[in-house]
Structure formats: C-alpha cells, structure tokens
Length: 178
Length: 178
Length: 178
Image (cartoon, rainbow over all chains, first blue to last red; front, side, top):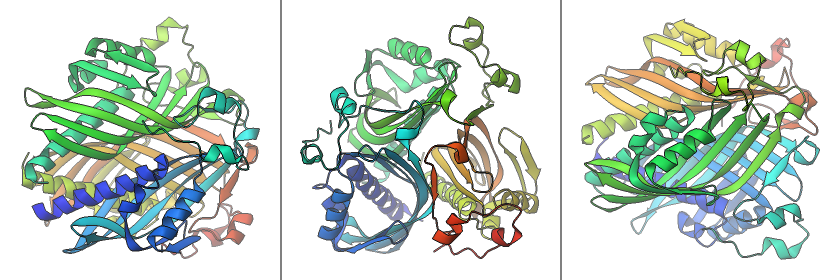
C-alpha cells in the first residue's frame, strides 16, 4: 500500500458514508451524485434488484417515505483498489427501520459487496448489494410501554397523531435536515 | 487530499473516538482533554445546549450516573480540514441507554455536526451537537423475560439488587474500568 | 504520525474487520489467518479465556453454530503502533446474538483491548478481549408479534421450522456465503 492508495481508500469511505447519510436523511437529489448512471443494485439478498441510477433512486425514495425513520450504517470497510479507476469493497451493515404507519421496527445486519468506478475524477458506486445475516421484526404497537420519540421529521404533535401511509399529506411535507 | 490532510483526519477520528469512549466509560477527568475551553454543545436536537468546558463536563457526568449503562457510537466520518487549525465533520450516531433505575432502555440514531480546533498542536472539539433521526423507548420492566446482565460496573449481586437513583451510595461507587 | 504509520494503521483495521466478518460469516478456516499461533483471548470480561490459535478457533466455531445468527461490530479504533512489529488498540464493540434454538436475542456493548504482532510481514492478533458495558437478554418467544426473518443461512422453509441445537443435521449444513 502507498499514499495514493490510502487517499483513494479515504475517498471511497467518504462516498459510502455520504450515500448512507443521504438514505437516512432522505436526500434523494443529493444521492444521485453517489451513483454511476449504469449502477446495478441487489438489496436484501437480491430481493430488490434494479439497474440504472434513476430506477434505483426512485426505488429508494419510494421505499423510505417520511413515515419510515431509518438508520443504515456501513462499518468495517475492506477496500481493494483494483485499478486506476476501479475498486471493490466489503462492508458490514446494520440497519433499523421504524415504520410509524405499520407500527413495526425492523433491525437487521449483513454484509455489503460493492464496486466503485471513477468518473471524471470522482468515485461513484457502480454496483452494490447486501446479504443479510439476520433480521428481527418487532410489532411495536403490542410492546408494553413502547414509545417512539420525536425526531427532526416530527414535532411532538406529529408523534401524538402518527401518520398513516395512506395519508398523502404527510409523506410529502418539507424536511428540514438541519 | 494529501498526506498532511490524511494525518489530520486520522487524528480527528481518534479525538472523536476518545470522546465517545470517555462518555461510556464515565471518564470525566479524561474527557476534559477532548474539549476547547469555549466549547459549545447542542445535544439531542438542541434540547441540551451548553457553553464552556466545565459546564459541559458537569452536564455529561450528571446525565450518566452509574445507574445508566450506555453505548454511544460515532460512525461514518465525513471530515473536512478547513484551515491549518480548523476542521468540520458530520458523523452518524447510534446510542443506547439502559437506565437501571427507571427500567427503561432507549435506542436512537442521528447525525452529529462538529467543529474542531487545534490548540497547542492538539485537535479539540470546539462545537458539537446532533439531530436525532429517531428514538425508541422500551419499558424493560414490562418486557416478558427481559434480563439486564452484569457489566464491569456491576457484580452479580448488584444486578440482583438493582440500584435506584435515589440511593446515594450507589452512583458514587468507585468504577474499575479495566 | 507519518505515512508508514498510517499504512500500518489501515492494515490493522483491515485485519480486525476480516476477523469480525469471519466470526459472523462462520468462516472458521479463514479466521485462522487472523491470529498468531500463541494468541491469548479473554472474551466477555474474561469469562471465556483461552490460549493458542487452535483452541480459540475451536471455541469460536462451537460457540456459534448455525442456530446462532450474529453481528459483531468493531468501531472507533484507537490504534498505537508501538514498535516495528507491534501495536496495541482499543475498539468499541457492539454485538447481537439471535439464538434460534433458545429463542433469545442478546444485545450488548463494550470495549476491546487488543495487541497485534507482525509475522512474516502480516499483522496478526496476538491478544484480544473485551469488557462489557452492558448486555440485554430478550426472550423473543414471549415478545408479542416478534418474528425472526430469513437470512443467508436459512431458507423460508428453515425459518418456518426452526432448528434446535439438539438437531445435529442442521448445524452442519453447508453454508453459502454468497
């Protein structure tokens, strides 16, 4: 390994972290910059497989309306620079999805397998997907004493009156990420 | 990016990791070194905002008595060196607080926004805060079959006879971190 | 810190990440390469202490049969290169173990303390162990509406008919990690 490789590795880590952040902050305009135009994805052991940047962004934004509060975390990067403009990586993944409309919380773990390509000097994700190690589904409505709590998407009033997915007004409310 | 920048980035990561570790290991004397004297914090979407190192350390140590077992994790660093002695970063955050006195466990996630400043050649946190993506509160007393388990703060006997916050003798017991 | 040190630090991170991945993917042949022959371990505050690579690998593989779905995560590395062939590190640790046979899920957190040694130019773990900050045990069978979900080790049919530890045919089934 040399300096050039360390610099590329740090750049790829940042790319992945920006991608994960955009998912949880629902920044669907910004996430576009993380992908090559011809990206292929195989999320959740291939259960959700898509090709092409527009298709992937549409899938992500529809999968994660404002009624789903999520944390997607990428850990433990094992990144190989495979050429001047190509790289591969394995990452550990943890995710949690608190679905306010369905009153479920899902927690899972797995491993990402990614490919990256440099386009005009910028690393982009050109292939991504993960296999799950496990997933747990909790029915939070039935859990004794369970309370979801306000976040940056929800004021106290919103939490007291939880949104339904069928309620069109909620999912499209402007989101203040700061 | 160059070597000098990579070195600063690694140093800032270590600073953040030392800070997070001091919080969970309740090392209130050591945590002082992580902060500038004029630090400002806005924890939990600004619900807990303070100025000045002494005030912040006092808040942290009072918020996390020995009856609260915690894990605070900083992930996915996106660090920008903005000058010879200044830097900014965004981090993903996961936290869990198992409150033995209140028999609740809180799990949450969010994003930190930090500023750093070099003082006498050492990076320090001069501004920090986070916005939550979500938080879940579990009443563990009511959870079927739930058991908390011994840790380095509690012997088996202590766990069988769980402390109350009103029990002054417990929270001040000497803590063996090794 | 200089370039040589940054390169060693990145190499040690990769070693640790490969080790953690091998544990969760149950790659007991591959994990051997992560350890020196004379490795000593003190897992779970020393409750599980062993010496020697073969003994450690045997413990790990027996502790984590196919009926236990796990995520072990190492975070927040504070790595010190202490000599040309030696290094020390502290890591934050999160773990979750979903035991399908006992219908429990355990979630915990703590801190690793590691030593590394270079053998024939490759970093290896020569000492590792962790102290827990806390652990929570959930009886998932009794949790209202709880569902475990298929993973790469279990087809839908396997999940509907959950294995018991006493069922010898299950734990030895071939595992497809891709």
